[in-house]
Image (cartoon, rainbow, N blue to C red; front, side, top):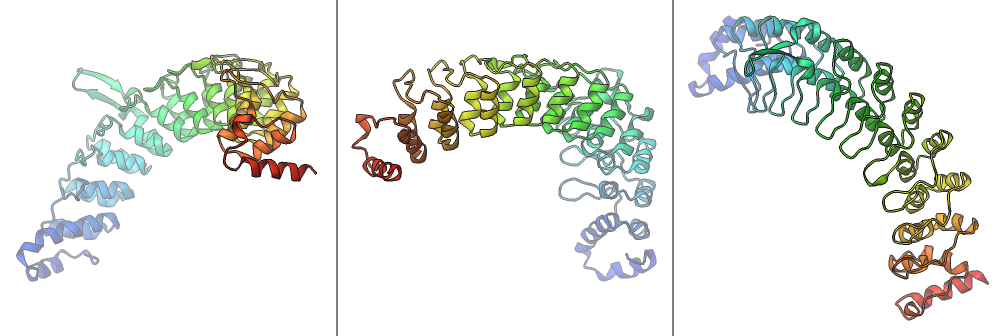
Length: 415
């Protein structure tokens, strides 16, 4: 095989047990194709190795050649009758893997041999999806140069590979945006891809780019004029998503394209709520500079400060307080930022809020103070902070296990 000699193979094959010859030929041609031994592949074909050989997952010899971008091997296999449309157990064809590998010449060869650019995998992805996902710009360009319009046999009409969606209703531009491949996004836009297409969850390519923190993709899409206010199923906009991911660059980019800081998602959440919960001080700063309301409430009456306090984001808490957020704002459970911090054991936040003269003694709708919330969650360090600021130990807790020792520690530390 290494020498690429069919004559030598013919001499050696009779020495193999008859029951092993077929298996040896199949394994040898798969390996030769993978290792780019074109002459070895030709020799094996000449002595009877089947060009349609498949591995245990249904991947053919041509799949392996395509995956490695081995054009000469692919030529030899196709000339020997290897089926270009052979699909693996999950519906992947050689054209899918050639596109994924960015093997432009091989993609062109397969298409010239009537491989279908509209062939779909078991999850409805085309070769163009594969190219887009991997940022394979060369392969994508070949697929888009006129060969990608494929016959839709069921409907009896022509459709564009640009518009074919996967099981999640994601088109190639959606997949390129998810992965952050800005050059491929640009290529697809120039070819006429729908930049406003929504996937199964109602997300546009811009929102997917924001979700991944892909600033380059977001910039390309915004330059193409996509809408900044397109909403997903949960009514989040790309700005909500960028804030939730803590991507200040995309937040700033979206705001420079007139994104609305007051857009409301499900639950009444605004972009500032998302940024505060994530703890992205930079994004919060940009939002506040664009007139985001630090007092805005969700449907549960929670403020951005409440989210930041509960998550322990000190810089954001300080930033919001300096931006005139109400330090004692209560939600529909009558819990404020102090309650949120105490329940989550955010000791440093409690110190900051106490220094800013937040009311640490307020009871919530169930009659619990922040101290009781801290004790119930066994956040003893947070309980200490509150006790040192003068909150009395509730009678119901004084005899609880560990409480006498805790009180003794606090008393000793305050001496």
